[in-house]
Image 1 (cartoon, rainbow, N blue to C red):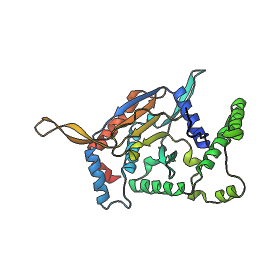
Image 2: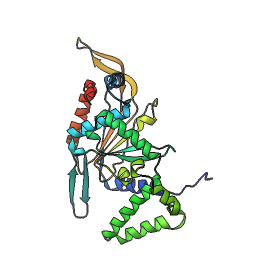
Image 3: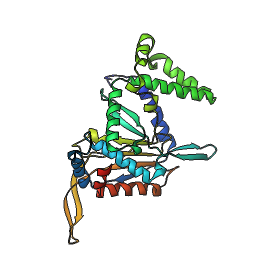
Length: 304
């Protein structure tokens, strides 16, 4: 075989590889495919923007973040972190009041990064729209490799405090030696970068893990008929949800005479995956039921 190109992992790819490998090796994933009919929801999203009630255009992505936050309020067991020691068969689950959504974000260079969107559950639609726009602004001033390096450094120091010396040695060897060396900022370049106020760039707190993971592949696959079927739970989170693109499809409706009819409809396929060590399907049901309420009665979004 004739190779075309070899690219060694940068710090971002190393962290993603480490985290997802840990996920599939240690977490018993269980999934539920959810396919709500969203014709009324999509129509209401247009009405929201035409109402003049909101300062900014409310995108479907912003609406869905708010919808998911409402679902998690009804199913707080999903907004949690797990800590489990398989060797000693002991563990704990910590639920959180604030909803911090680790959301995949397409960067200007077409790479993807997971950004921690803080406290989305308490924000109105306008506030959430403002917040997302500000994150996009700060990304433009951020050296993501440098931020990821600082997160990796903190994790390495934590491992050192815990006495995990072999782990620390391997990390340092992988980051500082040979072709796989990580290149972080130094000298004048580093000084100039850290002179940028933290209010104008992303920090470690914006990239650390949140309480739940959200992926919207629908924003990049509009017009494509397909759906996400596999998701990696990012430890220590216990729940991840992926939204696929809205798709026109035949649906069955019941008319005023009680007769079933097949009509054109809109479906938004979603994949919900949970850590079976922490959650059973019973805890997922209130989340899905709350989303069903919103999709069936989207008028309530006018009060958001």
